[in-house]
Image 1 (cartoon, rainbow, N blue to C red):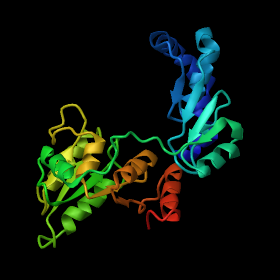
Image 2 (cartoon, rainbow, N blue to C red; image 1 turned 90 degrees about the vertical axis):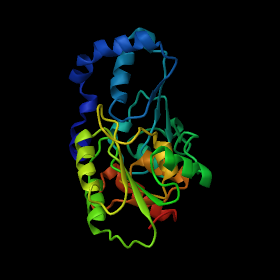
Image 3 (cartoon, helix red, strand yellow; image 1 turned 120 degrees about the vertical axis):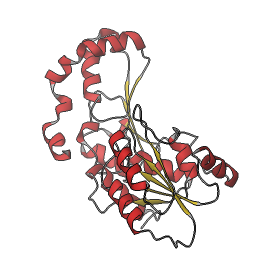
Length: 271
């Protein structure tokens, strides 16, 4: 998928841009923006095209925040119409320059993380667990299957549930975040029924019969450890929370995420 996108660059196809032009014009009229900020490599070329088609947008600068933190990310991040880039690391800066972006258009500013991602005091962590219906003092594992809800993480949870013995040295409880995948949430609830530790399944899919909805910073605040794939934003949010990570690299990560694993190891934040 990554190789196909980088080779054929559908984000640059004029036929797709023209197909979405009416939507873009309506959006521009409703929002009347002062600045446009892109946080995804698949939309920038479209917005640059839109600026050429809508005279009122030609004075609206396009700014990009690259949410992949290190070298190895999508070629689609590079767009000549971007006025300013903000990247997390010097490694990400080098990748943009490799793609032909002039250095004076790039600012190395760190990863932008909302201030609500912060270390929780012990009493805050207990309160967060109680809001999730969990024991306030048990070791809490957050299993994060991502927004889509999938990948290898559900299989890791299944192995944990089957392999964990009743005689654990310390009480364990688990929060499983299924994203918007209602089918996955149902499957995990079936596994949880026979797991030797309490499990709370959180899912944002409409109609999902799961634990009360909680924001990501609350889930991280309630946890002692998170099992996750090496997504760039998720990794930096967890670092801001002081939350240790168990990163799945058993399944080879996507290229734009593989660099995050190397980055954590290189800076001494992981093994």
